[in-house]
Length: 151
Image (cartoon, rainbow, N blue to C red; front, top):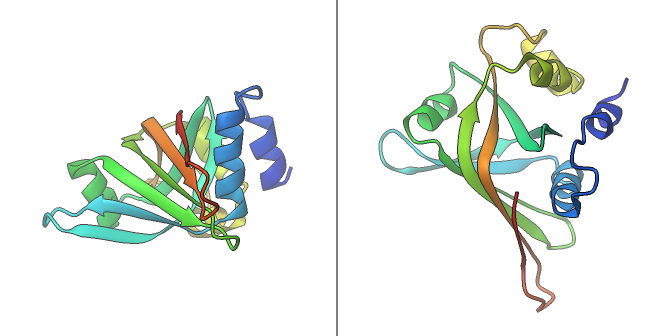
């Protein structure tokens, strides 16, 4: 089963157009930027990748030996931003909640990039997290007001 098929299969909120719009935007623009407050109190931003929507949550993954993981443990309030080639963008913010969810980890393994980094869902450095109380703002330069969603 391909990564896109798994994404479609785990889409719990089929009738939730807000979640669908956010997920489609993230999938279409695969390199996002995740911002944290570092343990030194300074802003940190790095490229990141959305994994999938499952159980009505937006899931991401990382490695528990990285500074980003340690920063999110110290201050889990994060923001993710990405823009499209058509000059639209999305900003997501919320609390990063880490969970040892094997179903999510297995679904993430369908992505060849994730599989290449971690080999298997049970890898002890492989961590998944979702955004709790996620808020999304989708905007562009059209002059129309931004769309704001609580997910």
